Image (cartoon, rainbow, N blue to C red):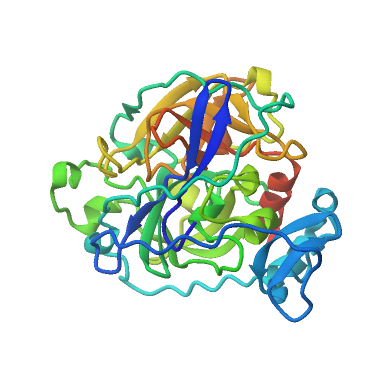
Length: 395
């Protein structure tokens, strides 16, 4: 994601041309919707540089150009090896990619949270694997419908952050913490909502606002006080984890890195009430890893802000059974549902009923079509489960 927005990549499918475009919402330095230049296109060379600017192939991993060697320390010999990582391996990787996000009291106010016009998509760069049985035709579009208020009955909210070039926002979900049942402080979102990808650093001033605009006070262009925008407080990220694939490969276009475009934040209330996020919100959803694709019926939720939306309302798309989208057949195919939600819905949770009837998170919005006809999110399996286990146990 170039600084604070995501751009596009072509995906030629049997059903037509799909432009992959993420759905973060940019906010320029003065709230005017400024955007940064797109990053350089991915490329490969024959070997990795020892002095800096890692490139080419290390072990079984093909790397984009321009990655500082320091960011590659702790990288597994191949992405397959990552599935065998233990807590200590994740801890070692995190020590090489430090997240520093000190609380700045009252930094986020209604003006800084204000949404602005999303950036236009950049030229396409990647095509999905359409001929090997891992990518399906694009599903029919589904019209997003408003989620009924009050939003305090939902586990959803907004993520805000500062980045080079301005400020941005995404959508996110309160998820259960396996190490702290009933007292979770964990939030699930997209990787590009916390980190720009290859060669970059974690975003700053990263916060989660549950039940954003719960009462509708800022709807219709109205100005509202912070208490109306953040009725359950502003929760600062203390720890963050995203996939090593996203950190090493991610960028401003939809490609194989988006097949691992997820992130988890541990947060704390800047005005500590003594209650966890889960207790404050009134619940959290479990994450359903390795959910059987033939049994999943997904509903995507988020705060889209590109017209006809304005970023102040929570919407959902009941997309039914997801189809598959893959840029690399060696990686789990992404889930795709029909949906007309736009930028701003990135990172928002995808929910599906488990066999016991309880709703669980099965993905998050990562990319979508330029014409806003469908959304795609990562399939959550071993790597995602390991990331959740690591941050849950992280002291």
